[in-house]
Length: 359
Figure 1 (cartoon, rainbow, N blue to C red):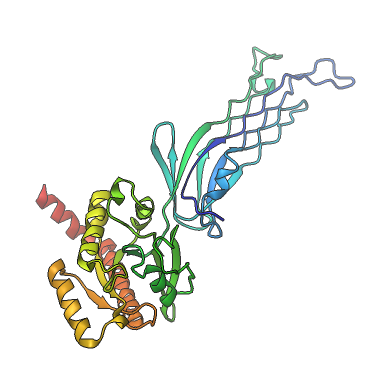
Figure 2 (figure 1 turned 60 degrees about the vertical axis):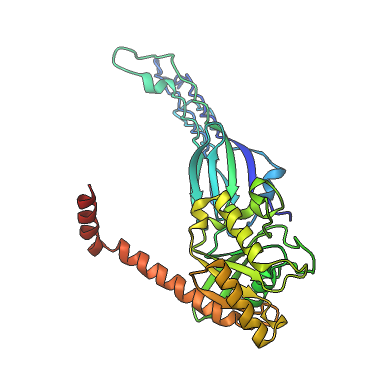
């Protein structure tokens, strides 16, 4: 199935059923009172998270989703049947916008999480509701209210802990194949990756993280060149980025120039994304002997003025990949522990004091 990460749909909730005017007609009873029942409520429309879906491609074919309307009431105080709610499955990581006013409605982040996107209409009232001491035979009823209608824009941002950055053919797909069960396409030409790939990296008992690979980024990507810029938004939810650099580009280009191109395009696309923790991963170390490798690493690090973590690997032979995966797991666990400590009730008074001092 083709990967699709944006879609526009219409959702229509069901109308409320109409109330009715009715009077009792029973043998030997001279005066029958009102007994008109209410209509049923209209069904609402919900979006529900589904971990079996990983693309919005289905919304290319069906663009309108309508819930059932409520049925009209009946005599003998019978209430009309309510319309069934409609649940529309969407991938985990879907952002839901009201397309008419460009307002974020919600964010699906868990399996079976539901968000109501269109409210069903309220039922109409039968004439039994209007009986009173001064109006013993009301002939009034009300129609149900119409269901809510909305035009929605769905945007999918894949949920991953780690995102991969790099030029085409830097070895990102080979790396994700070497550390996970994901099997993205690998070939000796640019742009073999045409859409994001996710892989689960298991480093121990009950220890794993999700890594995302997107198409390679080229110069001018922030202005629309290439494919990678279309998918950079998928890295916005990651906790950290791995910047994979090919130390021996097949076209003889300079690895430092390529790395600077990625950094430049990242900042142009989203400065906040550029501020995420980023590790430098120098790939294809197997193509150099020990002396050349040390010289190349020193040159790249010096010219980039790199201050963060640096790893040297060979994705195709898996050299250094296991150590990198373990260190990533340690960092992610440390980040989660720090986040839990910050959210602890014991830290709340201290945080409040700091805020008051700032004010």
